Amino acid sequence: TQALELDPSNETVLTMFALFKCNRNQFEEAANLYERAILCSRGEEKVMQYAALLYAIRA
Image (cartoon, rainbow, N blue to C red; front, side, top):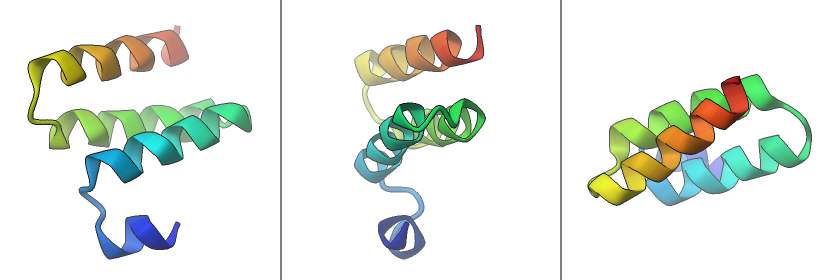
């Protein structure tokens, strides 16, 4: 949580925290974090990975 407070647009922190939320069955929070990671991502391949994870969470 502190890492997100220090750098709320850090793609790595967002995705790691999203995985943590998924492991705790906090899927809505994880989906929100993946949405933020998509906005921060610079690579098309990563965007597609995050979008697939987001779709899986929201399905």
